[in-house]
Image (cartoon, rainbow, N blue to C red):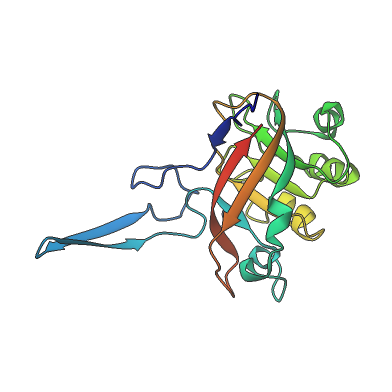
Length: 195
Ligand SMILES: [Zn+2]
């Protein structure tokens, strides 16, 4: 018997009322209807909705979203639950990760930002992608974005604004592709888990 795969769309719907990073404008849409034809112009940050950050986000001259190795965002992934925020090295040490894993973190009630030590612990566990169910892995009162810097300097892309509410911790296959945006520091993605 062929068992059909279960799938979960873990991308956030893009609407004017979605949460955005402090200081970013909310998504705006201008829709016109003429002669029965609907046309919408969108005005939104590349960091609105589910997206991937490329190293260019925090390092000038580093690879941009058009240079991301997309197959790195597709493959075996481990969904884990943050027990408290910020996530520190001790929490990371308890996660059942494999080498070269893609790690997707369900938020604790207060979110799922990381300490710098927590980010270094992820690198110590040889991960190749970090995804978070929040606006980003850095505390938004620290504009230096230390967690972004630690992970992006090691060429670990960051997936932000995932919707993991309906997904239990465990192992999945992640399929995640972004729009080609050469020269830009981030790209919107559609991300799906299956098992
Ligand atoms: Zn971002």
